[in-house]
Image (cartoon, rainbow, N blue to C red; front, side, top):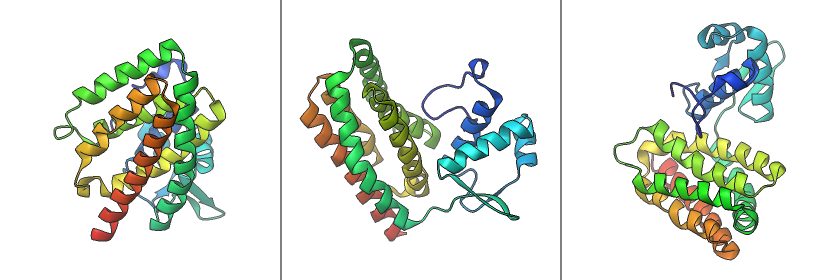
Length: 226
């Protein structure tokens, strides 16, 4: 990514340098541009980003809370490894919380929020899966999920789900070029968004769970087929 955030275009004018460093490094970690196990040198990162070392260090502390990096005394900070076992752990949490967020969004979303989700639906409908880059595909996926999380209007739930969606994204990036039906994965967002917009809590929850379990199955199949 010529890196903005996955979900929205970058606007640095209202953000601290630590926020900018966090978002750029987070996206590089999610896209595996910084590979699992890589050493992160704060001085080199500061040069790469054109930002001072202090904001970079603050960003790395936040990324450690997100489980995207890990720091070892006297060894340094490393990008966390992506393990197959992580997929089951992450999916176990997401299959519980994604339906909760979708149902809550269907119940409480404001008229303005539902209109925003309609715009997201239009973007999904118009999206050229075959011709899109990895970055564009992941940005679209993030716009759907984060739109629903925000619509649920529970900041604590939103924070947790963004964190686990980010971890799932790293795993997805490992196998994205091996997924046989990426078109289906993208298009099934439409029914989920429609259920939320229509206020159908039960259907929204059901579709959200199916989406997460389908994601796990597809990724697991790709991993073990490699």
